[in-house]
Each structure stands twice: as structure tokens, then as C-alpha cells.
Image (cartoon, rainbow, N blue to C red; front, top):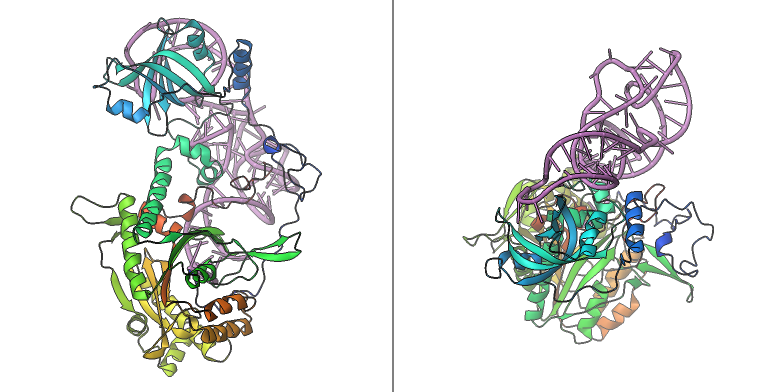
Amino acid sequence: MLRSGVRSPLAPPSFPARPSSRPAPRRPSLCRGRFFSPLRPSRPPAMPEPPFHPDRLEKLEELIALGVDPYPARSPADRAAAADLVAAVDDRTGQTATVHGRVMGRRGYGKLAFLDLADRSGRIQACLQKDRLPAAEFALLKRLHLGDIVSVTGELGRTRTGEPTLFADRFRLLAKALAQPPEKWHGLADAELRARRRYVDLFSNDEVRERFLRRSRLIQAMREVFLARGYTEVETPVLHPIYGGANARPFVTHHNALDLDLYLRIAPELYLKRLLVGGIERVFEFARVFRNEGLSPRHNPEFTMLEFYEAYSDYAGMMDLTEELVVAAARAAGLEREDGSIQATFRGREYSLRPPFRRLHYAEAFAERVGCSPLDRVRVQERLREHEIEVTGDGELAWWRAVNDLFEAVVEPELSGPVFVLDYPAAICPLAKPKADDPTWAERFEFFLGGMELANAFSELNDPRLQLARFEEQVADKDPEGPNRVDHDYIRALAHGMPPAGGCGIGVDRLAMVLLGCDSIREVLLFPHLRPERGGTGDAAAPPA
RNA sequence: GGGGGCAUAACUCAGUUGGUAGAGUAGUUGGCUUUUAACCAAUGAGUCCCAGGUUCGAGUCCUGGUGCCCUCACCA
């Protein structure tokens, strides 16, 4: 569940483990000061071999001996984008242009060489001819390697075979690459290595770079939907003294000066609703959240959750807005076809994302698949036994939790989507407003697509006394995934009056998976969590922030 | 945590019934002024994931471990 709801009775009651006490390896090249890592042991582990290729080092030394700076501070100005030059080659033939980029291909002929240069926009071929270049610059060719970053200034034109080409008058080295790039035809193929060395994956696999650009565009498209509606984008704390707003086990960290344990946020919800109280009536945050749970193709310990809240709206309004956001994201991801249909292909199945999406009541879906009303306790009990689901504890909360486990076991696998499931049992929705005409049910929906839960939304509970009772109920439940204690400040905020509001959370990474056609969450995360590399630098993913 | 699969050169991959390790790319040296996975010739490069075991002999067979992928469980 993205934001709130039930936890499973099968969840192990263990609390998050303390960080490993294994000595943290060092990254020597980034270790600039002696205060780099005061908390880490001072005993340095064996230094890994630097990944510098001997032949490239040798050429580097030769270049330096020739007076060439292999890492100049500045690049020639007036650079053009490779793709723009290729597109305009016939209008601009004979004009001079400059391109900076990485050498991705090289075909040499003695007194002439062709280079394929890649920049952010695409690729263009450069032609280096001995009788056209200064001798010292042509000599660079002899010490050039695939992967080097260079600059070419030359005349735009086509070769005999019609290839758009920059015929070089100037050729400069901008940065020498000391590590070998992967095989030029297959690129980097191993999924783990691709994630560990995403920088290599990105420059050697065009479709990977394009995928992450599309991810960025679909997020930007959602941001624009909010801004067009007068929403305000905010940043709320990541370090929480009390974790809440979802059911999940948190990561624990410690503030030294305050001698205080803090939790990395599992959801930004309670802070965002404080902002509703404060009068920021339409608010959203692309929030990185952290949950101390297992890894899988659909789970990463940190992930991006979009949460948004709108005063004077409700869950029905959030449903319309969610639909709009998904469609905007899908268009930005390039899924709209000429006939106006929007199709996503995910795990071998096609999903039509043309609105409106189906809306299905929880109780109806339950009755249809389980074969009885969720209110028929005798028959539900029979079904629970059939599915070996236990009711852990007595009272309404335990009962409804089991009912929802049954729902998740029987109904959810059938929800390929896109579909909204609405009106959940109120007992398992501590942050949602009960329906006025039947408080058994809460004004809450979840959105399913590609067999995954992508969104979770409520008409937000704003009755401070009821909210306090629900919090106390949760804490008394001693659920390791529930809140550790009552957030009294949040109750105080509600006591000041929160406008009626709709709120929603969307799992951005999972949405990106469906829209970009990636089976694994790792393929849509730039630096997914990985175990520390054996004998390597120990950097599991990105350098620490 | 359970089950299945994989691990060989910087990269992509072969490796036969167990017999002293192979190709392509990348690199190095030489040749080549219109190629585009350029081409031709020569050439360096491996802790066959780790540790045991069986065997005269293990990349190959066995046991244990590590990592990754798939799957189940947990979870969003």
C-alpha cells in the first residue's frame, strides 16, 4: 500500500537492524580531506587497483610530454548539438560548426580518420584529414582512444556516401578516458553491471539514456499539471522523529548533537496535511521515501512517491486528477498514437490508457471474486480458512485486516487495470474519512495498473478527535509497521482546523515501469540499491550525498 | 528465508567423454585520404567467482560459500 492501510499479520515482528558494523571501504579518489569520514574506522582497507588502463596511461603521459593538457578547464565556445547539425546539414553545407562529444567510433586510414562523436543530442561523424589540420592536432589521433571526450571544429558537409560529416579544421582533446568502454556493438549487457556502472550504461546504450530522459519528461508533465491548477511544490523533512502516514518499517538514524534517534520518512503525508492547515491549499511533493523491506523487481528501499493534497476537494476529485496525471505522463512518455489512443505495453500485455478508467467498488469486487458480501462474517470466515488467513487478535481492526488480506489474495491479482477500486473498509483506513451514510466504509481508492498498485487516495480525515482515537488504536496495536507513537503535533494541527480535502499518493517508479515498459524497478532507477561490491570500492550505487 | 538458473580476458561470448585456455570487440605495432560493427598483417592480455573434495590430472564432477537473475513468501 502506498500510503496507509493494513499490514499483514504474517509480517515478522523484527525491527530495523542497526547498520552493519563491517568496516566501510573507502573511495580513495574522492577522499579529499582527512575529515572525509569521521564516523568510519580509520583503518584503511586494501586499496583497490585503480581502473586505469596501462596503454591509456602511456598515451596520457605522451600527450603531457607533447604539451597537451589532457584535462583542460575550458572548452571552445559556440558548440552546436550534433543532432541539429545532422538535421540541417543540407542547409548549412560549407558552414563552420563546433561539436563536443565522446568518441564512440573510429575508422582510421593513415592520413585520414573518421570519428563518431556522441553528445547529449545524438551523434555526428567527424572527418579528420592530415592536410587540413594543424600537425600537432592531427598527432592527437595517434594517442586517441575510444571514450575520449574531444572537440571538433570544421566545415559541415557530406561524404561520398552521403553521411553528414564535420570536416575538421580544429581538433582538441577535452578529457582523456583512462578506462576502456565496453564492447562497441553490444554495449554493457549484464543487468547488474549496468546498474553498478550506470554511467557506462548511459553512454554506451542509447536506449537506456533515452529511457531516463523519458522518465524525466513524464515527471515534468505531471508537475505541469499541478502548476496549471495552482498547486505549490514543496519539500518537507526526510528526517522524522515519529514515522507515520503509511504502514512500513522505517530506517533508523541518529542525530549526534541532539542525541536523538530519527527515522527516514516512510511517507510525507502528515507534513503535507499540516500545510493544508497552514493555508497552502493545493500542495504536492515528489518525495523520496525509505522503507526497510525486502528488494524485488517491484521494490527498492528508497523510491519516489508523488503526494498531493487539495483543500475543498475529495477522493472523487483525486480520482479525476489521478486519471489526468497518468494520461499526461503517458503522453510525455510518448505512448500516444496517431489515432489518439494511448497504449502501454508492460510484461507482454497491452493496456489502454484512454480515460475514463474503470471504477469498481471494493465491496462489489469482493463479492464478485470471493463469492459473498464482505459483511457476511460467517461466509467470509469460511473463505479466510480456505486461504489460510488468520485473524490475529480480536476487535474490528484485526477482523478487517484479515478481510483485506483476503481481498489482496483473491481480488487484486485480477486487477490488471487501469482501474480504480473505491470505498475501502474504514477500519483499515486510519487517515481516511468514513462515508457519511455508512461509516463501515471509508472514502478511499486505490489505482491499479499492470497488476500493481500505483496510487492510494482518500478524502482526508480532518476530525481531530476521531484522528486521535485512530492513532491511539494503531499504537495500541503494537504493529511494527504501524506508528511508534501518537503524533500529537499532527493532532494539534488538525485541532486548528484542516479544510476538507482530497489527497493522493502515486508510486512514480512503478508508474514509470508501466509507461516505459520495464519489468524491473531497477531499470527505471538511475542508481538502484545493490549490495556492496565484493573487493571493490564498496560503493553500492551512487556516491553518498 | 524456500526453490530453480547463471558466474571464463576490460566488454560480448565459445569451451566436446575430465587432459596444461579460445574467438570477436577494445588495446598495442605497422599499412591504408571517403569509411561507418571499415579493412589487412603482427601482437600483449585470464585468481576460469571463492574455499574445500574426488582424480595421475578439474573451467568441466561433488560439497560448502559469495554475488546476480527468475520465482515464492513479505512489501508499495
